[in-house]
Length: 72
Image (tube, rainbow, N blue to C red; front, side, top):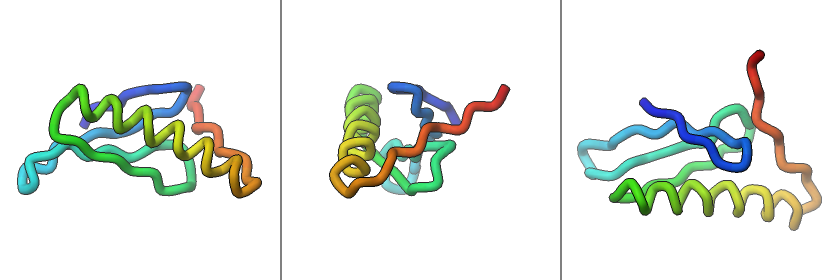
């Protein structure tokens, strides 16, 4: 598993060998936010879109987007 970061949000990414896609989920927030793609470039774009959508959706419903948990 490999972690990636964008705008302070982290995601764990794994390969799904059955479907031959990369699958990722945001870490450190209680909400469930996932994304997937077939290529590394598409995965990066999907991750960025998922984070941006999460923040925008929270704002649209009047909820503060959770800040990722940071371990010191």
